[in-house]
Length: 329
Ligand code: ATP
Ligand code: MG
Image 1 (tube, helix red, strand yellow):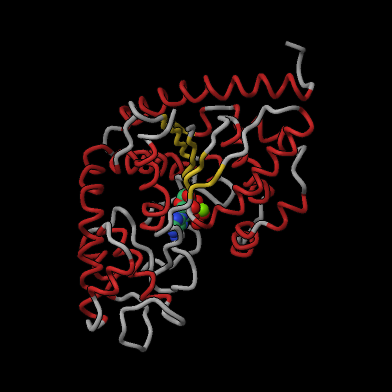
Image 2 (cartoon, helix red, strand yellow):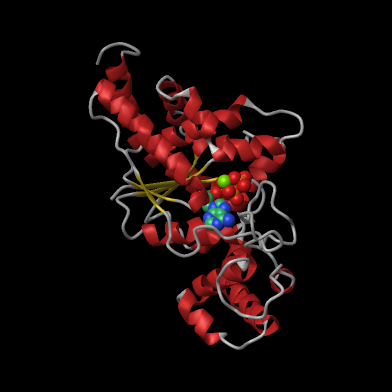
């Protein structure tokens, strides 16, 4: 099973990223042949960015991924911009992507509405680059959170269109969306997903938050005027906390509801805070050890890029040959 997924180096990674994506990456290392994980700096420049911060955030993200358990001997971890095949394939796939399809993308609608100065064509093109990321490796499985379902559907459509026209070269990938934790909500606005772009500061638990900060954010999570620790209509806040606790404890949501049957929200939130602190503490501690050594992080990413390029360049040679670009092989 060839696995591929990408994660942005924008700002700090949060509990939603950790539960929806990073947790699956770690697990995928044992099934992936290979498991390929890419820090997508080219996606990060589709909204406003600062060059120095982008570099620094990239190392932050690499260190978080390694701290979470990615092992460069069991997976390929690399930086997107190191492998030029991604951008080249983006252009070829652009020729097969319907403008109308890109216009329908929810992420584009949401993120473009939040841009103050410039809605870049890059933001519009984001899903094509994402399709190229995955298709360049002929990946069969893409572990992602729920918000990426639509983009995976589009990349399947692009692969299908390519293969119908030029022969069976690309692979239509399947998404792998976790059953629990695929869409962690903002603690302050439980109707929107916890997000890097546009989330609330108090409602976003960052992987690197200190225990006291995590506790404060969880305890001030917006809930409802009821008293029952149960999922249901109008109880998005409580349902979100139940989901988070289930993942952090490795339990089911039903078990959590049963355990807190009759408890007040205060006790319940205290338990969630404690579990999240425990869940993230080992990652933060390991991160502190890894982050200072940028030379070592760079060496890991460079070695990963060499392995990634070896795979992607083969796909690109086939693609160029099939579409009539460049000299015949
Ligand atoms: P942005 O808001 O800028 O898009 P992001 O927080 O979505 O940033 P990404 O790097 O784009 O972060 O996403 C990395 C992975 O995390 C993706 O697989 C995405 O589906 C997943 N993910 C993002 N937010 C959540 C969430 N709230 N719950 C579960 N998974 C999430
Ligand atoms: Mg995102």
